[in-house]
Length: 247
Ligand SMILES: Nc1ncnc2c1ncn2[C@@H]1O[C@H](COP(=O)(O)OP(=O)(O)O)[C@@H](O)[C@H]1O
Ligand SMILES: [Mg+2]
Image (cartoon, rainbow, N blue to C red; front, side, top):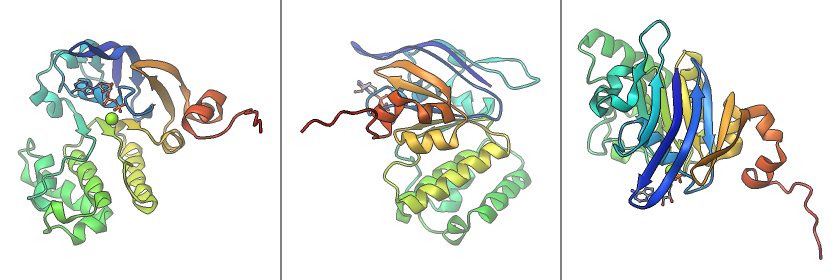
């Protein structure tokens, strides 16, 4: 679905992404993990056409359709191409209601009945948002706002969903709910690129993963295998691996 080749990104003199390549296959949930400052957000923003200085080849390959060169696509056509980004820090419209936020997710869809159908469908699955439909988004808890941000992205019926740190700052119970929403989206056929600092969680829900370190991919493979990898365990899972404790 998504093919990224030799992606570079620079801010002034700082090289934040140094020629990375990776894929997300159709219906796959792929994780991009890495420490703070590794270049995860920069990568997602580059894919979402928010950083015009990015270079490389980024291709969307929807099955049965012509490939789309995302690097040449104007940012405003991204949603039409089927790509939706849920940014770090959620980005819901605080002074709009939950319902208004959700409808904005489908602003491009002309068929009102279709919008209504998607809305009903999502709210049925998300009683927390349904109960708060007429509440201003800014009054929701962090977890509810994250849920809203993802639900808003799903209103555009994306083929590829880009998620930036959906677990950040949330209580474990909310993290579970958010990840249930994410895995449900995957099960319904959405291809997902999940950026997470919470490596354990990301590796548990994803099929494959890439490890980003200082703008380079240093490890990749099946998530189940990476969970057992000594380097990953030592650096990202907070586990002491063969550590000799001298005292
Ligand atoms: N707007 C910016 N201007 C300059 N440097 C930036 C900017 N955004 C990010 N960076 C730098 O790029 C690197 C990668 O940042 P980022 O992509 O946010 O990492 P991550 O999401 O993995 O924490 C960091 O060194 C960061 O300081
Ligand atoms: Mg980030």
